[in-house]
Length: 128
Image (tube, rainbow, N blue to C red):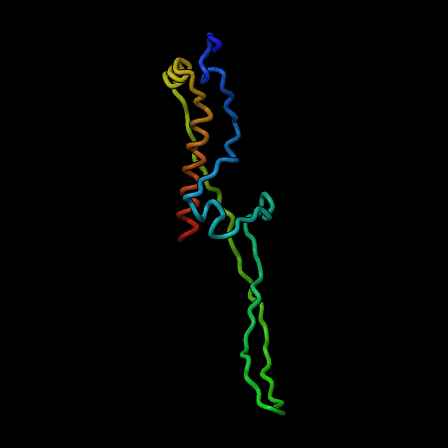
């Protein structure tokens, strides 16, 4: 057993990538319930897509029947609006000094928290 001057927590590297944080309990925001796309170009204010709907009915035919029911399709354009969803956080000098004393990476913790709050709001908006 090797003695060390440092504790394991002091030598632990904290990766500062908030974007990869998962929030699996939020079905809408995580993309588990509805697929999320990032195809809308940055700067766009609206987006649109077409929904193709098929109408008609199949039928059981008798021998020699020639009255086959026909199907058709129509397209409907849907328009959506791009909205900005944001929050923020700040630190006081006391917060920074306390985090330094406790050896806590304050910016990483707050960034993950801010991201989680945005994901919660996105989840609520997606359900409604």
